[in-house]
Image (tube, rainbow, N blue to C red):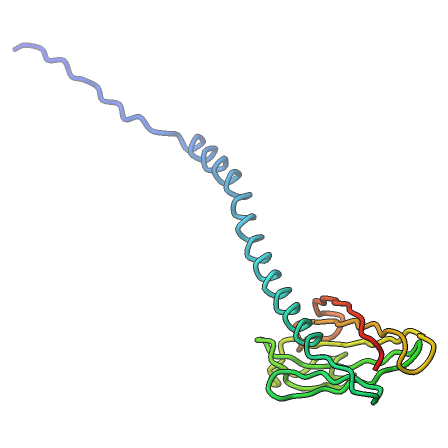
Length: 175
């Protein structure tokens, strides 16, 4: 008999420590990518919220007209609804609180307590809007400008200190 040579086959594989190190490197490289994905989602939500707040502020400003000699502003809103805002006159301030739905639809006025504490989720409001009208002394009735600070805050169900707020400012001639 002829002696045969047997080939020794050796299976080569990675050791456990090599696999662990490789996985650690992959995870370390993937963490920044995952963080960017999560950050992108929150930026998208923030952008959507700011766009909705801007739309509400534009609707309010575009619908505002001085009531002829009545000393107040008429704000025409969607759905044949009108809000009246008194002109405070020289140096004084006046505030009005409004509730808007998620789609920017005007739902109604709320009181100061409802604004500070938030409205019940069952009411369906998405945003609370505070309009602060402050008069500048223009030297008499019908003269001067009034500054409008429009605060659009969400979510409406949260207390005032817990809401995100966007501020929009404009001026109107005193009625």
